[in-house]
Length: 391
Image 1: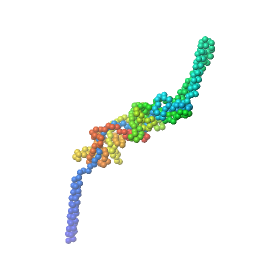
Image 2: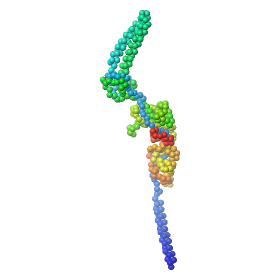
Image 3: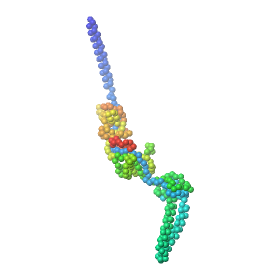
Image 4: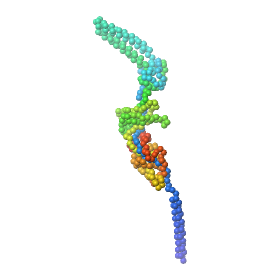
């Protein structure tokens, strides 16, 4: 009897367990069926097409604007100012009198020297006549000739002194500031003003580290003034000269470029950024910088492969080698091909095999490669040298 009770109890437990298991199986199947009734998980991203562009490796260095003609004017002789012939900051003509010092004493001495010269000339002419008639000696004629030369030299010396007290502009240009007044006494070698020529071009001096190849004449460089974005000026300059030696202090070679300046927007002594090409132009692939993802295994992008069944794309991870990563664009050395479709904005949400719905990147047609140059490729020469793959 005891065994029968145990058998009934065991059978009851088995039946209860089987009933619960069957109920759970049906519940799980219902849940699976319910889940399968929902659409597959997907993400929306911005699509970009891998394009080909022309890329010139370049560095960015600091340059300085240099006026083609610049002169600090000083007076050679001391004296009292009798005339100020220019205003602060005014344009002056070549030969224009800037300062006139008192020359009254020199002019009086010049008149006396002119009189002595005329007398010496007369004595010399009479001595020549007397010598020809043998009425005087050769010694007297030589003395008369020497006196004539001395008188002429004294007159020329006084003329030069008067000229030195008349300070003229050696070339046309723009004068700097001054505070001179008539009656003011100037010591010799006093700084007068800085005169800068007004031409339709200006020079740009800059230095390039020795480990970059030398720049050929007529190499184009891009010059940009340093300042606020809405107050910057940019222009194309061409290299016209280079220094003969590499400077020992910084192991750099100095170059000079000619920059058109017809409107005078570039000023002398201004510091500027100079973008200098350091290698030949080459064709490279570019993608938006947002497309580049990174993990411990390296840098990669998600290539979007068409999925006709779902009318979308499938994300496929692709390792890439970056030539340069800028703020907006990235240059790809290997891992992609022109025309590949990659995820740009929103790529961080993807994983391998995920269903993706993409919208076209604004301003880009998937079938048309881009070819505009990237300004972000420039680097600062104050940093350590990088290999060409990181330019």
